[in-house]
Image (cartoon, rainbow, N blue to C red; front, top):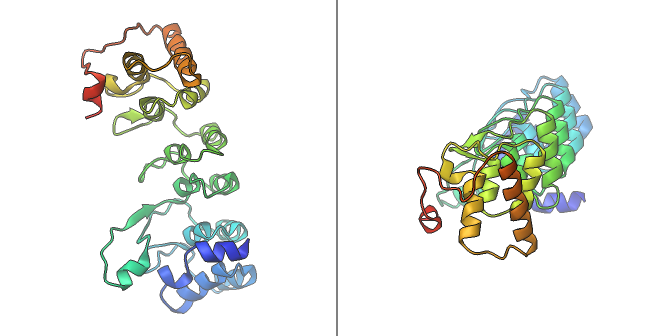
Length: 255
């Protein structure tokens, strides 16, 4: 497992320059808990952003060094610091241009690359479940096909706002817009409001109407789930056909 992480993860020299900064990153890279403890005892600034724009905690997360992360968090590492770094630092060294990325630990832990234990650890030590730098942790977790429901449920149980709207669109609305009715039902079961989107053309009812208007097979597995979503909306008083005042046709919606 260590060899796999070393092959796939970043190197200390990618984001940490010299001196104690590089020494600390190298100890993390080598999963050397004793060296990390010693450097912390000697007063290393545990929350310092490196010259490459990364904290030690974020580097440990990218390396999937769980025990190192726990040690850093126990000693005051802040999981909510915004990292600002080049995802491919080698490009810069070769003279290519690349925009920097923003990264926050909890959002990153929603990626399929990470087991849920990293998310749980970060939340235990104060990670903001409603962070809105980039995408929210909830939105990030939707991309994890194997653990998405487990991660999302855990986030909601620990205070994540399931109805928060990113650019006017809720997370349940975004899943409805791609006709992912299984996830829509999952969010409904967690208490999401299907009509919370700021623009009525992009709420769940509008997506259901588009799905019906476009003639998808309602007897397919996804079609049956769409029917169940429609039934639940009708139980909430939504009337179909659903055409809000700002209604546009499905083809216009996708322009």
